[in-house]
Length: 56
Image 1: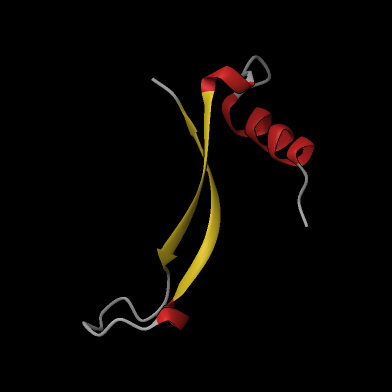
Image 2: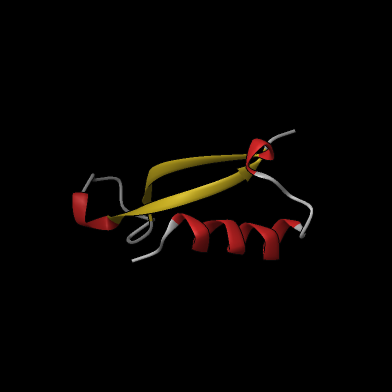
């Protein structure tokens, strides 16, 4: 399991040490990650991710 401190450290590694929480949007997303060429929806083809996005 990942803590909030872990997420902040990963954001700093990715975006740079000067990033702060006000510059980051944190969201949970259910992303289609398997069997991408198929038209039928299957819940098992999706994974849950925590997504960190730098605000513009």
